[in-house]
Amino acid sequence: MRLFISLVRNALGGVIALLDLITRGRKLKRLPQEQQQVENAVQELTLYQFFACPFCIKTRRAIYKMNLPIRKRSVSSGSPYRDELAQGGGKVQAPCLRIQTPEKDIWLYESSEIIKYLQQRFQ
Ligand SMILES: N[C@@H](CCC(=O)N[C@@H](CS)C(=O)NCC(=O)O)C(=O)O
Image (cartoon, rainbow, N blue to C red; front, side, top):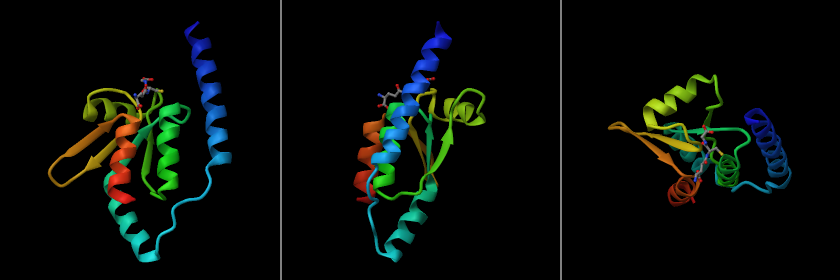
C-alpha cells in the first residue's frame, strides 16, 4: 500500500513537473552586470529538494522566474544530501534553502518563506 501511494504521488508530481515546464513563461531579464552580481550572490545558496514534490516545484518555478541559478540538491532516499539536510537543518523536509554566510549556515524551510526571502533579496 505504501509503495502504491508513493507511486501515485511520484506520478502526479511528474505530471505537475511537466506542466510546470510547459507553462513556465519568461525569466526576469537583467543587465549583464546585474545578472553577474546575482550569480555571484547565489553561490551561497543551495536548494534541497525533491523533483516531484509540489512545494519544491512551486519554489523552483519562482526561482526560474527570478532567473536565479541556485544550486539544487536532491534529497530522495539514498542521496547523501538527505543526511546533509537532516544534520544541518534538523529534519528531512523539502524544499529547504541553505544560506551559507561566513558566520553560520541558515536552513530556511517552508516554500512560501523561501520564495519571500528570495523576492526580498533579488527582485
Ligand atoms: N509546508 C511545507 C510542506 C513541505 C512538505 O510537506 N514537503 C514534503 C514533500 S512534498 C516532505 O519534505 N516530506 C518529507 C519526506 O518526504 O521525507 C512547504 O510549503 O514547504
